[in-house]
Length: 370
Image 1: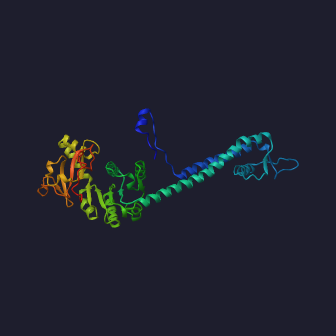
Image 2: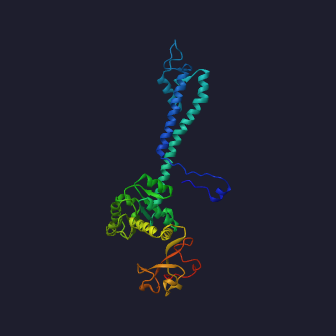
């Protein structure tokens, strides 16, 4: 991944930074082999043009002391010369042929050897580095997030996780398409290419040690099957799955999803609200857009907030999580906040979304043992 110029450098002058072009090592090997072949053919042509300046000891006679240098002889001479074997049976004897050998064929021989040896070493080194990186990644991978499907929804989910503090090296993408592979790599993510409904593919993604799995392919049947397979491989993971149609949501939950997002209904509701009230639609879009205006977040309860009504807090509380159940802020069950509660709040996006409001950072959390 090519690092773009820093903001300071960009301000100092007009700089253009392009991403590095990554190619397969086999493509590089083929390209260099073609270059070596071009050197080989070019040298054969040079020898044939000046073949009268060469002596072939094998074909030399009293009538023709130099012998006849044929096309086969030129190819033979070129290969043994460029490979530095040099049997000596064919040799340049005229001044012109010797000068061509000194100033043209000798540099070509060096370039030929550099291409072959350098390419071999580069391919081996690159594959070795890649194997080492993969082995090191697998060794340290655990408690990570697996994203199945890297389309628009998958990418937005990863952006939200990263913007809220998750490191990119703790995210693994599973996607069978070349487009998904390219997009995930451009975002600096590890990718497992394959069908997420196959156990071997999910095992390569470290599904057994993952903490969260996001299932968001373009097909509900694929999402259901992938969720079922994930749940069998990891009974303890928290699975969030997307479905396009409401009727498939119960099946997704039965397959093992802890949370199901109905994309078609969500989009349809947003469209309807925007039609009835454009301003309400803009507010909803604001809540769904990270980093601008308003932000929905969940945080722990502070000690000073225990026994206080949700409506009296500085944060705009919209829900309270108690004993893993979600209550609306006006529900009689949560009239007064208690230890162990978590708050779902709306706050300015510029504030840390998963932390207490600025000014209260030094206060103890209600979940602290002290």
